[in-house]
Image (cartoon, rainbow, N blue to C red; front, side):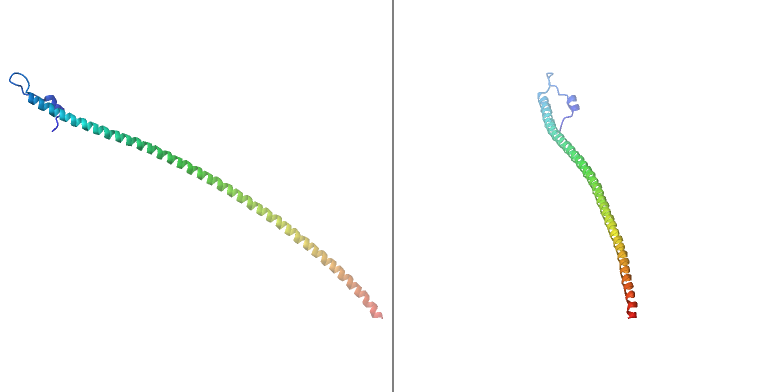
Length: 154
């Protein structure tokens, strides 16, 4: 059983007959104090070592926590950059698609105008040919009519 500080302070040694302390009682007391002091010293070293290990682990954990925070921030930054780049690329792709669509529409309009002009030209040629054919047929009819009266005289 350990001695308390109060017991050490209040320790009273029996006196010998000639006015001194009982040597055996003093030696027993000092042995108890020495044992308790050794036990306390061992416990102190043990707790000091445990405290040192705990502090090291806390330092390692703090380093790990900082590394994780840095990794998280880097990941968030990279994610933001990827998102920004994807948005920018989608805007560029959309503009490129719009330009291609506009060019296709322009090409289609040009082709339509060309085809409309061709149809108009073909209609004009058709009218001209019809007119020329009518005139030619009319001239043949006129010739035939001229020839008929001559035959009837014969």
